[in-house]
Length: 141
Image (cartoon, helix red, strand yellow):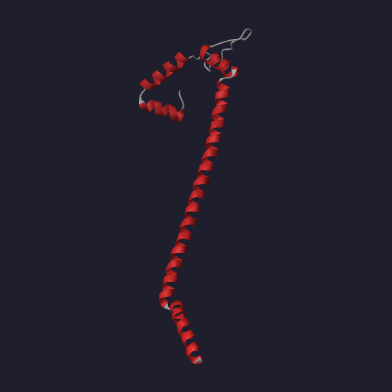
């Protein structure tokens, strides 16, 4: 009778042992492991992509802050009195009381004005091309 029980108990364990030791169980376990590992890799890859995007956005935010600071400084300068005074002097020929205007003459001793410069450029436009090249390489004579 002992043999019968021992034989029966080994028979009952045997199908479970056969199932765990079979190639089908191994293949199913391998497939499940591959799915779990691929899911892990996918999540890791997405995490890396998100981190790259965050770094890129941080860099862009820093650049925009720098640009914003630069534009703010320009705006402050444009609103300042020194800028307004400079623009009035350049564009409207403003002079303060007690200031004197100094005129600087060119090499020929004549004062150069905007009109003289325009006339010179018109004359050079009417000159033949070979004379322009001659003057370019050998100087105006």
